[in-house]
Image (cartoon, rainbow, N blue to C red):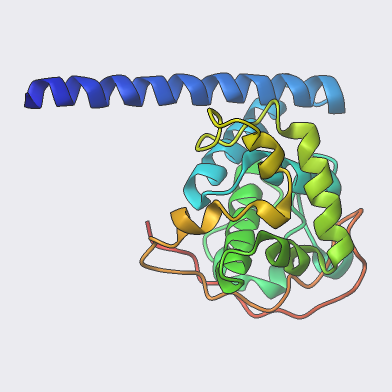
Length: 220
């Protein structure tokens, strides 16, 4: 019986890996076609998004939407208050998350930190993704814009937990009903100490400046 269980778990793991790889291929191809990103760079961004989405139980389409709004996938992008990289992370506001980051313009590092920040805001808001997006970008208009933009990515970057559910991708793209995240993140033993706001929007974000205390990274 135990051997059958091991075989089943192995098969399940292989199936999930295959799905993740397929999703990553779709995302990278879409980024190359839609935004003119070189194939190698698109693959790196796709892998980083999938990894961060899995780690923090966030919809990949939502992270891609944030990146497209904040930087249009330009990893060297600079914004107000020192906002840097794909997800326009503000170093002065999140020093705690940057202790081991040598280059914030590096896509994997930037997406990891940006996702951790969003995760912290969501935890602080008791799983309210709309409130988390308001904190990240500084306004309700920003939250709505991200939610709408996520719809552009939902077909190529489905949320793995909802991929088999009817109408799930529509729900994922609406920040007001993205409350599937709290169940997953609520089990973490080390929550992020979420600040009040992100301190600056990106290239298309709300320009309202905010202040923010550093976040503490979660333990795995």
